[in-house]
Image (cartoon, helix red, strand yellow):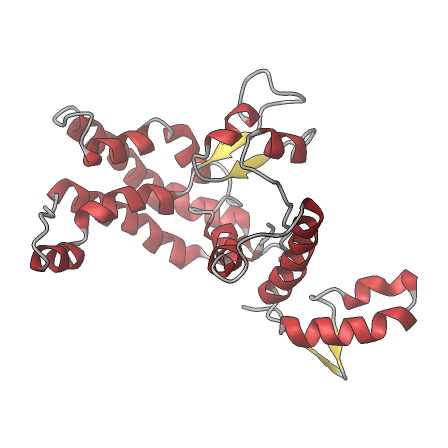
Length: 266
């Protein structure tokens, strides 16, 4: 998944899907063998060896997702949801500490909205001035709260999730390209989750690989504000007679329908 628009990057957004028949960690290790850089992802254990000190050529640098961290607190701070559950006779207490955690994380998101679309250096300057002090408080405050809780409580688990990965949660303070969340990738994956009730199985590994190709084409078209159906119909009709040396003209971000170039999404 590539979307550089949040930091005014020049490269057009694109998505690529790769098929794996299961969720074992060997698959991301094979896909990313030899690659170096920052990997922003959730806490899926299959990525752990990518960050390991012995990984060659070098360990990947992890960047955690604040949307995943917030989710652990939000379920314990959802006042409206608790009211609905109570009306159904289910006990659902509200934790003031969780409410405060959500408020503090949301303050970081508010700052991000103000610098979204700026260049990486400008965005980093805003973060160091405004977000860094909030992050220092966000670390000290739950550290104190955790000492007052049983480690088996849901609230303690939500705090532990964030604190044990703190260096990767602060990565956005060192690099203006890093987003607060990996929501761009999560949104691109929604098509898979939404389709499960309609197509539960791929039929074969080959079918899964073909599905990944189609997901990549359709997802990239959507990211570039292009109607996937119109784009695919036009490209499939034209591609046989299109010069092989100019196939890049048919990519979603360069595609022309008639005389009109569809613009990138803002």
